[in-house]
Amino acid sequence: MADLDDIRDGREYGVGVAQRTDGFFLKGSNNLDWGMKDRLSRIFNPATGRTVMLAFDHGFIMGPTSGVERIDLNIVPLIEYADCLMCARGVLRALVPPTCRKPVCLRSDAGTSILTELNHNVVIDIQDAVKLNASAIAVMVSVGDAATEAETVANLYQAVDAGQASGIPVMGVTAVGKDMARDARYFGLASRLCAENGANIVKTYYTEGFEKVVACCPVPIVIAGGKKLPELEALDLAYRAIQSGASGVDMGRNVFQSEKPAAMIQAVGAVVHQGLKPA
Ligand code: 5RP
Image (cartoon, rainbow, N blue to C red; front, side, top):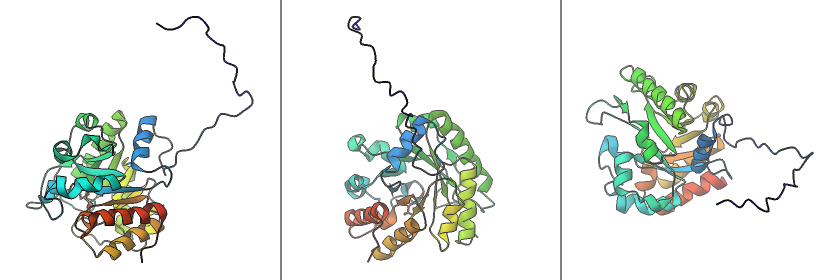
């Protein structure tokens, strides 16, 4: 029962003091709803505006590739060092401890594997992302691939509609079309296309001239690590991406295929959040 006696009149109205109305720290996100901003603030550290996402969704197209054979042994020990986890729902439910308190960017399209032709995908029901408390959903877009471009752009569109309705941001993941040059012109086009279709985050690849890719993309960009490189080269890749304006990394193989994955993800974190230059 609410107390009905001793209801005190308010006194501190701050009359004459303008209400503080902060802008939101992430590029292109100021006009989003509260739930979207809350979820984005779990993925991107508001203190730095950046994120280290740990990607281990590879099994959904590649099967048990090196470093993700045993998520419990290879990946779970790395979770504490990541800002966000990116994986598919089967692995999330089966192997990621719900007690880890990390935001999840849920891989939300599925279809073909490396054994056939990639990217003939459909999008999972947004209700499952809601049930899994996803902080974002990720959908692949294969710009420039005649066989799958239209259906993957449609997937993105559908994911954005569903994400908007539930307050869940969408990450557009640029898959490089088969005959595409991996240059700033291509990644600039692919990233912009994702953002124009409503992606709240874009994941793409670093290339020379990346500052132009970032400049013309109205939402934050994170870079994939790509194939395993020597550690110093992978850190340098992250450094150059951050210096060019990227808002973080979504890295997989260069972390979990490293000889020292825990040290590697912490080094990536120092590059991303502190701007340290690898040497
Ligand atoms: C593939 C993905 C992967 O998660 C992505 O490529 C990141 O992993 P890596 O750093 O190993 O490239 O989105 O669809």
